[in-house]
Length: 549
Image (cartoon, rainbow, N blue to C red; front, side, top):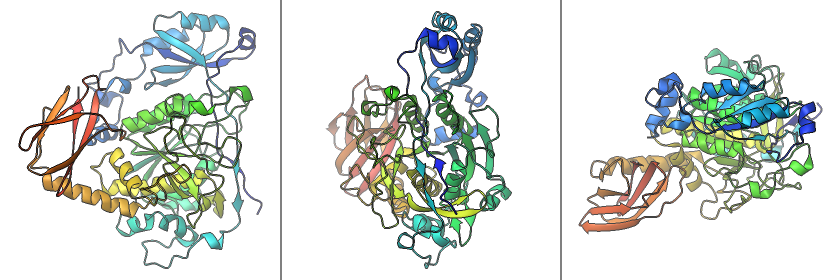
């Protein structure tokens, strides 16, 4: 069998300028950003009109308030843009923007003159970058035998599950049940007929599909990359391949047109992420990245990798802010001229996944950090070298790429979230990093190292025990708070930490007016939202949260 090649990474960049002559000849897609959502028929008080019950429940469980970013783009503004003769193709409520096909300079001028429009900018062109390689059978040096007493007969896929403790979670009964995973990729060829997904289809856990590129639901005739990614989570073929979340629920979202040479908007990924949120996804996993373009002068530069520049990275952060656990492949540029991670792997509130082989050694192709603002990336590394996957036609092979490392980890996260349904996405992320192999000395090759979700499970269990032990003793007030919050706890306090939903530490001063009564004073200009207090005592850690308004 010839090595199967597939396109994995794509890229975008906002083009800084474009000539009127060029636009007159070729339709151009623009981001059009709006000033506000004034006059919207939707209300924060009635979220069920635009969010599913599961999406609302996810927010409520994690203490996340419905806010203005959840409200759809004002349709009146969309109508005004369409009235210029241009065509609105996609809308983004998080960015309060639309992607618009503009045919002439006069249309662009008319759009920019609308009082509701903040600004506009052309979007970039996607380009295929690298391909992953496959071998007919697995490398014996990188695959261990499934000799343990396990819940499944993993076959050659045992190493990738065992390396991160996914088999341990399976043995405990956690296989992703009732966790919704949105897979954002370039197509899911034959996933509707491939026997490796029989149980997924027969048990009704394949919840739906969307093709953001074409605007319909057809994803099974497109590229096969997403189907192979899916097999690493949902695959169930005893003796061949068992995915890391074989009992989870899945949505398949196609955001990329692999073979197209036309300009295609980064909005596809943003729209897919917003759709995943509104559907109620617990997890999004993406084995795509954005770095270079058809025109070299339009390429991203390293300075863009700060988690705040690209639309996709902004959207990834927003998805995490909505309580979704976001995973993204780091990229396959570690031995190339680019070297670094792609976008949105640079976002600081997500889990970016690098690659190791079956022996835990860093893969040379795995993209590296740090980010442009000095943060360690990737976050963790899993087996993306010699990963055992299922291709269309029910063919099994070992493949290389962070595209495969990422879904292996995503499935394991689903098992962990199933085991701890009351924990926030950030608490789960912290537990994964805190129990990974290089937690005490993370670096820009491995990140925090190879994760062990069974160890993370124990970490979260201890956290839960401490919370239950002391929660009745803790008095926290006022909640919501404005510039300070007080607590009373009948324990000896050793340390207090205040973090936001992304795990960032917030500065504060701690005062004690009397025994066991403490007040945290923080900056009143602190952004409104959910914050977490971690109180370290001689007997354990007490965790709580409050709303800053």
